[in-house]
Image (cartoon, rainbow, N blue to C red; front, side):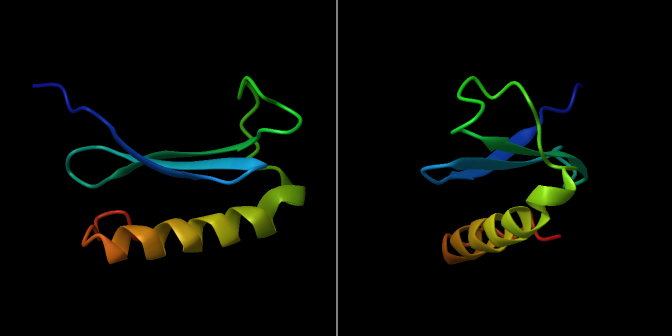
Length: 76
């Protein structure tokens, strides 16, 4: 049985932030794209030091939305 990753994300006018986990709630990865400079979302900016504040802000916003919907397996 192959585990299928589950994705949750948030998109603003400028950024797309995505968290992925597998069925056992283990994290598989994070994605952060600058839609303004990279509309095809080819460059993951998640480790870019200049994007850490936006990453934190989008992560917090996504967690709030997920908790409001009763989905708490993406905390972290």
